[in-house]
Image 1: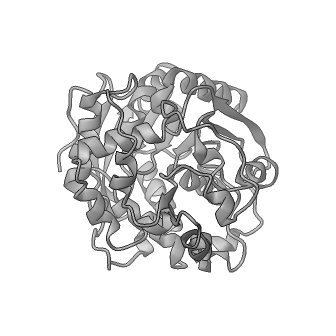
Image 2 (image 1 turned 60 degrees about the vertical axis):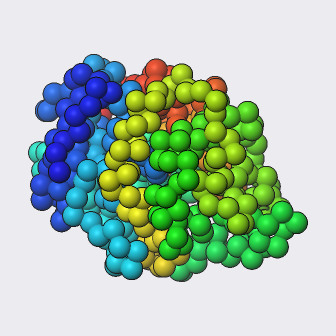
Length: 369
């Protein structure tokens, strides 16, 4: 696999393949000089290292060595098994932490200035800081609050499975997207999106962005089918629709100001080659007890400085009732603030990169050495 080379990758961002990373050959984007304080940026789903392209150069200009990998199961990173029936343990949280430690070792980075995670990259970043605070010395979480490590026995339970029957019994039958993403047909549904992958990504990103009129966010009262049904359909889907069918209802008439057609084409190109199953396997681990090792950290808090950045119009901030409050008051011992960017939806670092960079630089400065 070759590094990523495309006109939409800003000049000054380097792309390369790094071998010997916990069984992977990992694709990495970099900006800034090696030897400077390092930042590790971890993407979510359905994203890529490319999703950090708008913030990497400003962070590098502020004096940082910025590293953004395609995580296990994504993009140009190779060495993982994309079969649905393959062993899921390589996608367990503890092994995802091993991936990042191996990458830092290969790059000669002993300690990070900060690890920064967005969407599903947020719990990975949080657990990195929880488990190895000596290496991951600060953590900034984006769009997905971290409520703390699982309690004893919790890794064997899947809350979305517990609620599935109640969601299906609603007057408008529904299903949780985590449950859908864990099913065998999900990857095939996405790969065979009737509208084509570019249109799928355009609609999916629009639906979850600040541009979509329905993203007026408020806290949910609890984990009940009736409350969860208040979430948009990209989180709590209509029971008999696929995700491509779900987002097709909200296809925008024109390209957004923050995501060009050429940029959408990169996502379609990369996922069209790799498929979605690697990322979907991360969701599947929540149903299988794969992350039971993390129960060893039950009750432990993140000790390093931590903050949260999200979009004010991002339902990801509120999709798990109570998680935001637990993150602020229980999961972190050194909380440095919650910041919700006006006008931004779920893709905050792509929708509002300048605001995101300003908040990150303020946190990285205030956190001290």
